[in-house]
Image 1 (cartoon, each protein chain N blue to C red):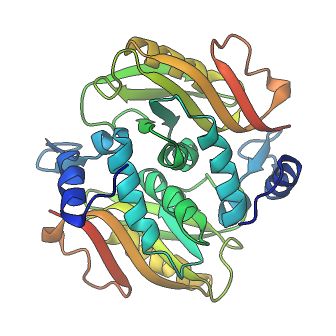
Image 2 (spheres, each protein chain N blue to C red):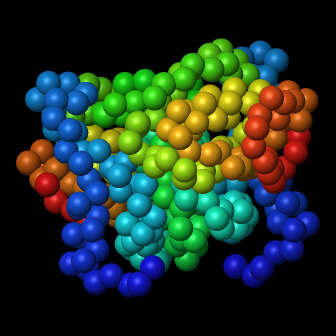
Image 3 (cartoon, each protein chain N blue to C red):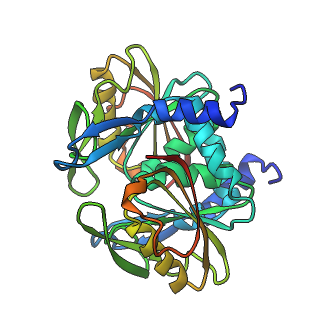
Length: 178
Length: 178
């Protein structure tokens, strides 16, 4: 791929995110990222933007399922970060920390293996969309339970009107604001 | 990372996969890959092995949730492949193809957006574990529904005793046999 400047990159990525009204519930405008994922160059540019922000980060942590799409790839293309999955209850086979949290629509619970994250590690949270920030705040508590530090959070999309940044304690970087 | 030869690579990766007996059900020996994911060098080597097999592939297709961990990263590090997610019912917002299939324990259903995959595209399936092959066979049908070709399937782990290769029509490559 030829290198794209920031403006071209944003234009190309934004053009591959499709608005789907009333999904999964009436009144929700869903951001469909599958056309972006299917475009190798746009996907690569998105992940490279995330990986570039991980220079001093020891671990990337992401929630299932859409967070896995970005988190592992960014960790893999970073200098040294490993990947920690945040999973729904009943999926992780060893002892877990657990947090319940509110979503844009409904509630959910996430779990992390107790021994996956070493004390003092520098951690970055990666997900596709920052909506109300419920997942991010649950992750902050899980990372603190392990004695590690959530240094930053990276998102492809931020839904500014939901004010998900409020009440979070880490640096937040977003590629596309809606 | 210093380049590892194939033998060192396999030894390092195999050492990071933990057997957990009787999970999620009595009698199942679960392969816990989270220690591998947390090790940047082992993760990178695993994804690089997958990406190297994608030279002529247009799209990688992977099932949620653990398939997303490997599929996007491998597509991203490949020469030209985009990524297509196979999702559980109710997750994809536009028109879908759908397939029900048998798992090692239970049954499940996967869906793919009808317009994600162009006719004639060369596709590779990527997942963490090849067990009974139910997911792979469902994916073969979904890819055929779109008029594309499933050329190959790549797995981190293959449970040989479950004979998941039987009845599949594509080339299969596996890093670790159990």
